[in-house]
Length: 400
Ligand SMILES: *Cc1c(COP(=O)(O)O)cnc(C)c1O
Figure 1: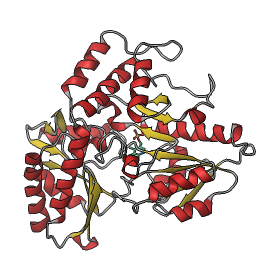
Figure 2 (figure 1 turned 90 degrees about the horizontal axis):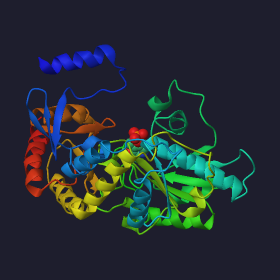
Figure 3 (figure 1 turned 180 degrees about the horizontal axis):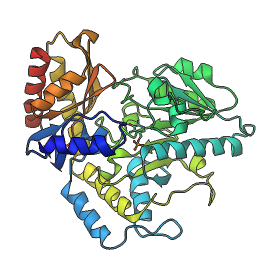
């Protein structure tokens, strides 16, 4: 009853741009959420990796409550006493030189596109309006017109043109294709270390290292979109660390505030963001003290509470345990850390019905693309929690 009431309201008054599972969540704590009828579920999506720290982490809540009574928004017309501390802490943690704060992930991507274009014209001396940015097939970088314009997902583009020119698409995981696609006008290569929305696609070993070398050799900016893979999700602070590389620009968002507030950032070596002059770019809410206070605490607990190491350990356990499930539906289980996908054979009839069955057993997962179930619980998950989940996952994959 209660559930249907809320669903009806959404259907009647909301834009229908999502097809959510029909569970209406009203509370969350740690890895658990509760629906309006009092049913409890383990969250295995973590809001697309935005709540890596777990739902409503008390320390982030406390930091935000403290800030909310002091100052929420100063705008960048003035300075605020949270921003500089956030920059310093974030730069020290990620070994970056400069930070540009924004709000959504898509805004961080858009900001990076502007930054590399400006860098290309002013530093690399690319002729005006000729800058090219190389991106990958099956990329996901957000939903703005410019970003969907270089998506290869038909539905993301269909009906939304005309699009921003200046992008070239190459296969993901193929460093040779990158080298071949580069021209004198190429300013940047934008890539996800692991493609999340595409279905947890892990590139071949050495790919990011090769990309790093090629970008350096051709003087193009390497941009890693770590909005989903970053901040502990893969068992390292940034997924690029698995290959020991540092991008020139790294984009983070989602878990940067632990799910409390939209906070994203472009991390940069000085050369690239350094081309921005006052007035070149901006955001009313970007770098606001409330979001920044949340982000500072979200970063602090990620490190202090050992969430990154836990993600590595629990991720290995989950990956190997899922791999042992002998179900005829499973084509492949893959992933790094707690970013795991189980790809089902087409004959399984799509991942959605498995997600619905898991929901019936108290586990919230979401299909990504048609045939992949994504498993990405908050990074605070324990072995006991995973055993509880695995029992149910096995049951559904064997008996549905
Ligand atoms: C979620 C996501 C984005 C977009 O972030 P929004 O906050 O939804 O705009 C961009 N890139 C990747 C890899 C993402 O997973």
